[in-house]
Image (cartoon, rainbow, N blue to C red):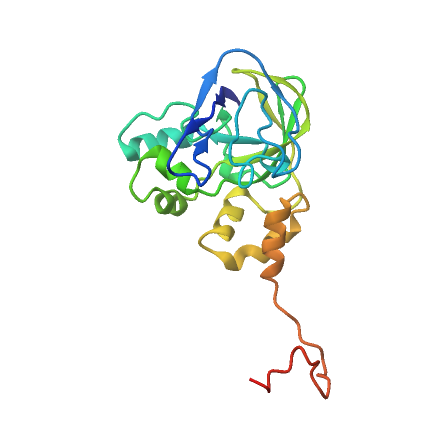
Length: 235
């Protein structure tokens, strides 16, 4: 397992983002790249120095510091779409070889190169900017139906990485919550959301969404009168 490519993006104009700018156009680089924790969402951008994240409201931050996508999955998409898909075209920072990213567990840790340690947090959810960039009709639905989303990772240990670095799975948590399961729960199968809560390292916004799907348990005996703010008799 290794990094086939490390990809960085500069800011460019787009009509598909509400802020009019995007950093999705990521290109392979040959030099070593510094990886560090970027800070909380809304403030921090990419975990790779030199990589641009423009829409800080929806992208970047500690839980989405690094985005990884498998070259094997890009090759499958290339056949289906009938065109070449270079490394970085999905906006991924890391294009990997030999890793089944969809089957990676939330909380699974990867050592990349000698020093960097990354932790799997959640899948990528397709957005309008992604669809506009790729230029495929109905892309959000197509990508969602395939459910091969790639994974975001948080930075546990900072350092330098470069193309060709080995990737080693350091440990896998004792649960069955995979990247693929979280993706389906957040998109086509919301009934799966409560299952995600066993993953302690789940991204906070995903955890909050899962908690909202928990069944509400009524008390064994109802009070004689409802509190005023729950009484709907007045219409």
